Length: 559
Image (cartoon, rainbow, N blue to C red; front, side, top):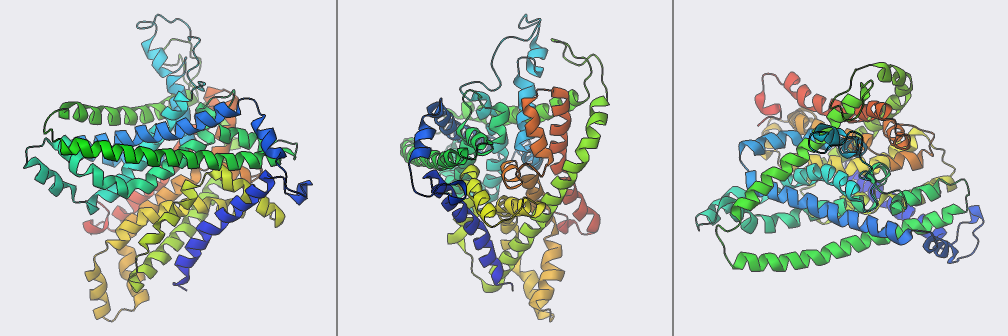
């Protein structure tokens, strides 16, 4: 049975995506007999390109994917070059998991409450610095250029790329490389850029591609922070798919294929930029320059990571304040009164979505952990490391969700599958499994083989070794991987909305739907609940090993 785990993992990641893409491609050319499409036609594409503002939607989607990824990657590399090994480095590394656990929608709401014309920044600066006695008439949130959308994506993608970089760095022995460069007279930050960064990027290339794909096709963040007239391409596709006129499904399918092309174009442009930057970096490294520019790079590395971290946490603080705010006139920095009435009113309607959220997240995470453990244990027993198949783990993250989920819904409708919690668990599993596997694989593969050899010499079987030695000793990283899986599932909007057909509500779908209402008090309640739910998983992941292994510090997951 253990040998089936890698096969099941590959089938689960590949088959739904291929089926979804095929069933999105056919209606895009007018073929869907269930809706009367009996023969191929280009009518859906003509209708798509006749839509007002379609070119601008494509441009904003493409630009947001590239710019958000470039800024996020630059901030991460600047940080790693400037502060690796320092006290700030240790402090930021402790915050990576909490930052990663904040769902995209909650982070987007927090940023919106922070930068809006009547947000916290404007209130703190008024009237003393700005002279504003009332909110200015400025389109900051949902601006037509997508700048607030890019900012929201950057805040969330920095922790992801940082975590992937921290996982890859031990393979490079960066301390030795930097020490060697410093012996030649290079300053520490410049030494890191010249001898570590060129080797690190190939190791995090697939995560970078995943960020490009997500940022260029995101739906929930775009609904909160993105432009509205016209919206981004992915938001338009969702609107067409949800239209009561079923004929719009043909144009939605064409839009889904167009979104796939937009993401592929973004990846192709990034590939060209990689070649350009590699050539420029090669020339810069060859020219030497042991000190010039080191101060600026070091300051930028500290400043931008602190700014991004502060914005994320202050934004969540803004959600908390709004959730208990009474009357709050502009430009007062704080509400004139505080009240729990918003929570009291929301509690009855919170119970159902919270139960659905917890059920879907727990079941999908347990299934993902079981599959990941099976595949990794089989890898240990057979001695084969499927490194060539690693890109399959990123397939659900690189292919735009809107492109294949739409087709997957069509497949499920053809099979007569009803929108249930089980179907949504299946949809979430596609995205939870890669994160759980990637979070757990490094610790599993670096497990000291001497423990296994010792147990085998004492007569333990392979199964006994797994259950009584390897699993208890890897409890801390396994719980951390499960906490990451819970956070990913809780933050899923599009799989829940499409596969659930709007009949299964979660905290995320309810919070995003409230974005159109503009009631900050109610949004604050729901977004804060959404932000706090994943933290429960990380609290358990950190606390349970310390409780169970109180007398065994090496098994608590602490350095």
